[in-house]
Image (cartoon, rainbow, N blue to C red):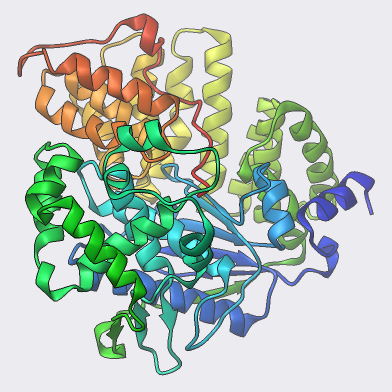
Length: 516
């Protein structure tokens, strides 16, 4: 075996690729890749669809059915060491990358448990998908405690053997935090500014207490309707702690009730019978030998690679592709590796070969489009972007609601220094609507709307970004623009300083993925 490929397999904690028996499970909301048994993968995919349906039922909110390429793709691979190596963080047990047309989750090998508390690796995935779902169905800013408390509330879901789903189980994975971690007072839980000022250096109970408050408000009969009242107030722009005092009453009383609630021996849960759960069709495909051998490289590539790592991966990808020259899946993975390594012409050639074999290979159009856009940027030639947009135009005809053709149609005008047409502006706004979990995209859509004089709409789009529970550069930029727009009248054609936005208004550099 190629030495670097062997190292890649060791890095991921996998068996050598030749021994892997990879499957792809495809459903309405998910695409799952795993080197596991067919029965386990089908059960895992079924449970995730049950989970999505249960969240729709409990919250009363439905997300738009994603286009095939805008589904969440999940790589179930390796163990906790694999996740730490993939993420570069010693505390991470799984992670989620929320991007339009390329939303990815990286989790450990499948561990199905019927009728019992889910394995922690599954808890991590359910937590991250709850974020994905809530961002897709909640158009307003959510305070951090609510975002994390809701995700924790859903993350302990168990799947019963009769097809029913149990939601709202006590969060056993947070029991240690509640017993031993540093306490977080209620005012600090509700107010991010107070929390940042008072938090200690030790690991604290923030996630555990957020779960406790959410669970209490969801089930306590005497407080029925209070959580919804709080949500409405926050959506209207009230500060979290003021909204809490108005909706929940005296915080000292709520703190005392919460402490009492934690000490009870039993807690309620929702048990949804099978007839309340909708499960879409699960299609299973065993990957051909060449595509299976590419999976280790593909996982690392889709996690994101630096230049040096990309150069190593592309050598291995070429070696595999030389043995499977007629496998479209192999050629698409090669095109991605070539692009990552900076070889645009080679990426285009690999994508073209894949399309010649199968013209409906969506990711081949994407990789070819990426490479052509980079070549157009580098050349500076007039009209180069007209050629660069061609693969995305072809892709749009195959998959009308794929967000990337919409984004790149708008980007073409910006790169050319031209005023985007009305159709281009609609395209970017539509992309943001169908991929609301992509926060850099939302920022750019907000700036575009502000430039059209739609100030209120722009501010409403920026507001959730300012409350991003993971903060970061994007949150700070969004907060700056949100504050600047407070003084701008509706209908004013406002434009941010070019120094702040850059020539493209399309943010390619993303904050690190959320990995809580």
